[in-house]
Image (cartoon, rainbow, N blue to C red; front, side, top):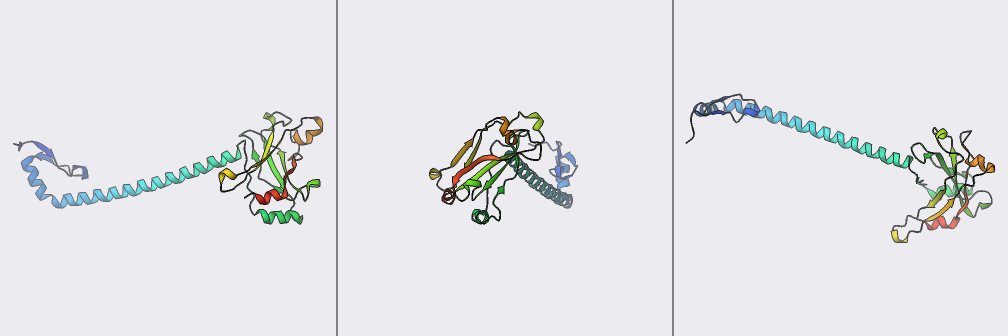
Length: 219
């Protein structure tokens, strides 16, 4: 049998009821404190709702922070990666502008080859440049003046590979087009490959990167 003298706590102790006494008094306490217990339970539920709301808000804030950090990481990878993807929107419109000489050359955003690397930029002539005009797409790269030029080896001697990405929905049928340029390090090419004195060097690359009709075949 249960001992009537055993000291027990009120089951509403977690809600704020501080009662503690023997079993006989406990039964009386439960009968007399019904209203008090309901009031304490109501306050506890209200506090828990507020806490849940606060936790949900904090959770949403953390999700937003994680999303922002993820975007920043992606942006850094694009900005400081050895590979740079240049997406050209509204190709047909820009091609017509090149044909009519309204805007013969397009320029990419500048980018770094690494966090403290070379500062480069791309340019493209969709209707060709010079002798290639009307026959080929001309694609060039240019070395810009960068904040870390003093730390880098000069003249620039790294191989540069240009790739036209085929976006065919069928991955197995994609036929990317690539062309590489290995800089010829010599005194005559210093305006192209040397450490920039002005804002940017002269451009170099592939005047005959791709036939004009190839561009229309790529998705």
